[in-house]
Length: 315
Image 1 (cartoon, one colour):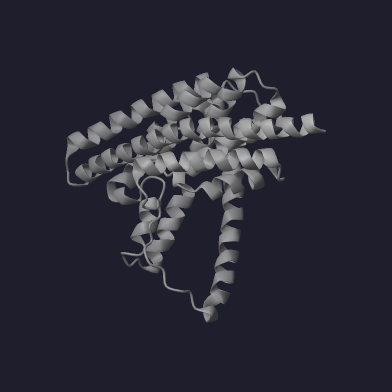
Image 2: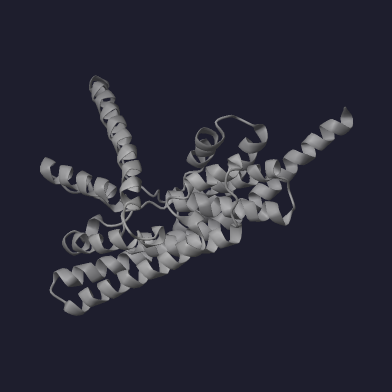
């Protein structure tokens, strides 16, 4: 009994140590990922603004860069198909034992492809890629220790939590994501590993980007109790839109499959279609954080807001 209890404590302590390592490396990688995306997006927005002012050289640069990005991403996808999409389904597939991925191949290819795709202005979020980057780091550490698949899953889940935490400085969101979306249950080992890795990754990204929240909305007045009914209506609307978005996304996969193009070439289509959007509305490119922050500073008409939602829904 004493020996078993001591072994349990040792296992928990080792999880804390290894989760700290996972969180540290994930925080560094995702922070560099975030920084590169921000610089890339600023560069492309500057180019699009120059195009809107009639600079043909800037337009030529946009065309050349988007073509090069499409070719590079296609080459990366061809070599490593597991980096397609957000990366979250691949992580779930790994944990269920349905997908076997090379952690190093996935890590560096996802890193480069994500920076190029999101940094060029495509309306994509960084949370999915960050989760896959973190899970790859966790998988790499597990493989270096020659752990079994069941023990490796704790490392992969910890890396996923750390990735989401570093992407938005949201450690609790990273932990809850792992428990609700990936594991669907509460295990002490998974909970401890995810919490430690997410906290360390959040600390690293805070050191790099500062303590200002990603969505710094400032002072928010107390919401009147008499208007709580509007929150219910808002929740219903968002729930319906989320359902429609999922259905549309799955339908789009079927539509793309009818094209006479290899799957790794699909990215060229949004890279071409994003050019006119970037020329006329450069500020709405990218993940959308800037748009959320601008809503409190600028007044938008309902038709403009509807158009913005529709455009981003489509892209």
